Image 1 (cartoon, rainbow, N blue to C red):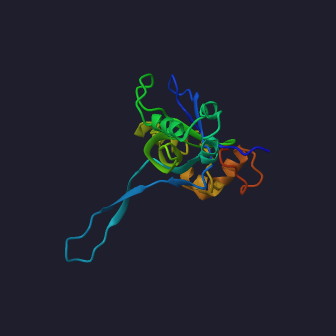
Image 2: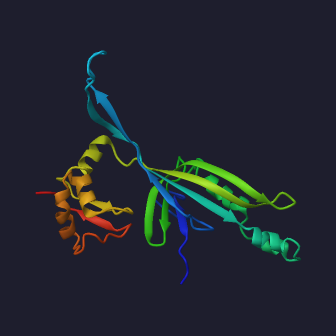
Image 3: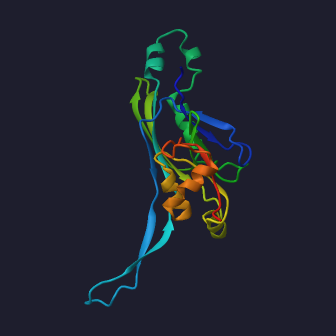
Length: 229
């Protein structure tokens, strides 16, 4: 059984068409999802008096996914360097080729009028959809002639802002049907708390999706979130 590789599918030629594809040479050892929530303190008392305030929600930053990709072609390139067939072998992608392909994800695309949106997928699991917002490339090993044969790429992808505030309000209203993509660590009660502000409504989600065991959720699974009546 072959091992599925992490892939980065990206827009090419037109918006929403993920025709471009980059495949990790080695799968990452971890995926780091981050989300920052901003709160403000309201109505502090005058200085000198006992402080008291109300914590108010301000906004939530877009979620990010950080992944470290490792590229190593030393055994292939280094071992074949003295082989007469070296030039034929070098038609395969080099570390520089991999690094250039990643860097293209951060460049302006004339047909898209912006850098491409990327969809990260590992096997059947769709992990994240967003744009590359930070890229650090580090070359760590070279041949005698200066050819890089080992490198790492620290990538951070930021989720794409989907809608206006009004539309976001509708999508988070319990009176509107919607869908939800299961993320690692999700449980039905957590999803109910997020979308309905009521953990007890997990049964409504379970019934709408024919889930018999609420503890078994698969990352990437798409759930129908029914409106509350």
